[in-house]
Image (cartoon, rainbow, N blue to C red; front, side, top):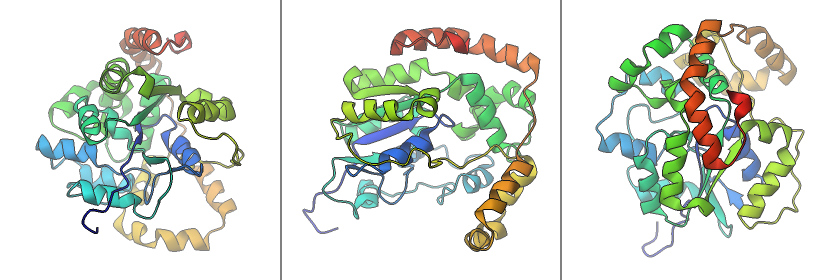
Length: 309
């Protein structure tokens, strides 16, 4: 970067939560002419900065986890400094919002402070969904990477947290929304933080987007193909996850995509889609765990969430 050159600094963040429709929303926002996430949707800057400061590297089983999530850096920071981070947006100019949609920024309260110190005028979007559905989706996505079954995983979660596992493996903990949302509101102010439900984005996409654009003071008059599937991830079983994280497959994946028709890819996804269901005993356990947090979150965001309890 030329000395004295002004960096394009991110000022719009989708900070979480994982498995709540954040990828779909980021892709939709990226289609607006005044919003761009630059070279990648998730920068992993402030979370890895936090992890480095807390000396949390290396994460147990992180290599497999990061391969599955397409994080190139594995057990080290993605960027060495702020300038490298902002270079993601060097190819985009003359827009209003530079978007970073890293969903692990919500995991630790201190990250809100890091973002504020970086750019105090930032706008924050937080996506949530029924925490029971979120926990199950998170578990199925990582099945085969963390070998526990769901019952064992939730029973052992405190041990994983104490042992310094990456937060993506916190199936229960990442469904506790209240304190995390409250922290961002405290740091950035209520007018700069908006919370949206995954179910609204799915069932009332146009209205949800218009709410966001109005809040960001952007034009609503642009064409977005609402029939397009913006998040193609599916819940896969452990065999598919093994393939997905295999080094050889990662190298030939671009070629495979070119050779296999989209129709056959979709057919394969249906065949391998995981059919496991949550045990009734686990469902009751999660309902009990999340009930109070749902009630408090409902009051905080002024939204009826009683259908989640």
